[in-house]
Image (cartoon, rainbow, N blue to C red):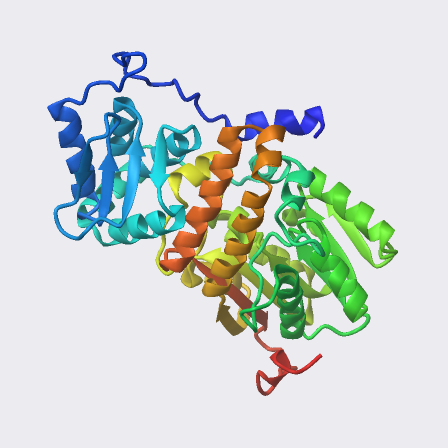
Length: 431
């Protein structure tokens, strides 16, 4: 891995060192003391979460368990300051503490997180604390034109070779796959997702398609190769655009696909189809009106559109740690919030599909591949980077499995367009 990627990695996460915040009273070769106040903090943390079936194991081996159900998972806390940070702001500090090894999970990480997520969601005490912390401390990065480039660079420009280790081999799709049959491979399910979207858009040869947020370019190439359309794909991740152009040239599709390194707000020209797969999460709630203006400006009178996005059932910000370390500027909208894109210009929503459980399967494929290449990732980056990404993927599985996150595909067109299918039969026809 080249030096530029190494540098991007260091800037990207910037997780505090494992010794940061140490209490200073540790005895070499022996566990440090546990005070009555430490025990109180541990019990207070479990109480804050509504007494979930979890056990906290303190740094001297002492166990503090919830008073109700039999514990099914254990969190090992390595020092007193880690416990203090965890109680002050669990949503923000758990990720850093886990990444550097000051918290370990004894057992299945995903199961632990699912239990914690469900407990937190149903605990009025935790929700009150979370709302106060979000209002006072967890301020998200903005997504104005200048800041968007930094946010995208933070998440995507950490090395194409890193993502190649665990995304699908065929199209490098970093978005939810589609599993019409549960036993599909990741590659088959990502191909099925692309086909599913193309059927929803009713692509036909000669269509002009504009894509907002093209990733590594796999979907644009798929549309051009299999449907005979011409694609202008906008993306502000430099490494992704370079990768996509090289792939298109190698596959002799560069005459059909134009990868443009620019922001969606600068989309120019007229198109029959607008599509965005996994980009809306980066737009930011305050910019949905701008996105709607762009779509209205570029879409023909009978044009069709589809937006595929992580979302929520009720308004809520992204997890504080993920927003800070992994996914800056991210915001998963509700369907009601997404309507701010469509209502101003009277776009009609034709179809909404929720693929939440498909994302659980997709993420399980990703984390299995990440774990398979753990040694290589740790050697190229460092242990904290590996653990942070493992936690990010595991936490995402837990969030989708517990319903904290959704995955929406919304199809739309102009309000007076009568060129519409009479049924959904076209979505499930055999290719």
